[in-house]
Length: 131
Image (cartoon, rainbow, N blue to C red):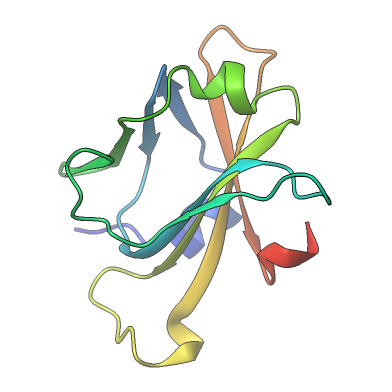
């Protein structure tokens, strides 16, 4: 059975990362990804819309989790940890109608540097431009 990401995020379920590989404890229909440093006048996140580009990403869905490997990045925690940046997914629940705007959400993944487990916490956000 697929676990709803809205419930998982609200219940405080956590993921983890290993270098450039990010593990989510839920499934989703992925539309786009924003990855990069916090937005400022000098930098803005990179938007990835070609989810099928094998040179850029690899997405693996197992029974109870989803794993995204960011092939062009090194260590996500080193590059985006310490509140330097984040990954934002634009997604819908697995099997939901992606053409209904009410089904679309932004999921912010934040890297926690204080644990040896390389923990990732999730937050539902309304507008990625307001970060």
